[in-house]
Length: 186
Length: 217
Image (cartoon, rainbow over all chains, first blue to last red):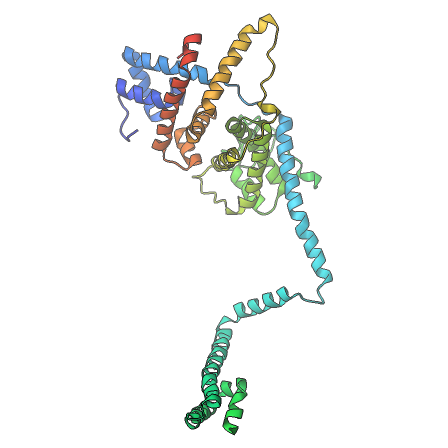
């Protein structure tokens, strides 16, 4: 129903109101109730509408109300508490079990420790990781020229020079690529 | 299990003063004031099971009634409410006591959602679905007629589309306002009003036979 001032209601308003909320004024929204009751006193058609809807209300009220006993409530609450206990018991067992295995950390512990170390020292670790990655990349990039050198005799001299240059300027390549020494020997 | 956290007397059953409504709870002569829902939820967030038992005992009766109305089955209703209470335990730390949201509205929303989920599961036809044998004594004729009418009304309600039935349950049987029902169902007030109007039209059509027999409607 659209927002508006409900100072007066006509039959159409009462019809719309009772079609939603039924014939019991106690269920009508507070902002419309007073005006609706006034309209009922003045308008016979509005009164008829309310009586008609109240008959449907009477039928609906014949459905029995669920019986909620104190014992049932106790059972539900006690059951919830028991499930809380049960949910927390396995966690305690796990904690006790891990204490016995403290001397031999599992692979998961190692990974977790490494990740936490990275998390705490992110800036430093980031630089270190970046430098390592760059070194590996350069090393990998020099690998094809070394392979070419071995396979293609025609390009051997140039490739060797290229590899040698890389060896001089790139320390990680020296560290990670043993084949460069062999290439230079050739 | 810790004996100190056994359920306390159910404030929800005899909550004339409704301690949940007041921030510091209700005050009964000669007793300490009962803590309000927000205070209990803050304690539950710290792992206080006694507070949990108190809050659960306060709100379980209405939640069970709502669940049983939706599910039509006491055992399922109890299970659903127990599940909802466990969610109170896990969700208490996220509760923000800003005075706008009422705990009971939140709890009823959880209950309604759990009931809807449960109704979508394949139903097991238990003993509760079998109607009780009628009382053969002649004096029970009127009672039987009334029971028959109530059964027809229950069937008509059960045949309503789910959201219409939920709106009717909340607004007519649980006496919630349309605004409350809208919060519980995550709908607008006008949408709830529309559901109610359609539900009443459908009920009137389905119960037209009862009209002629009983003179009602």
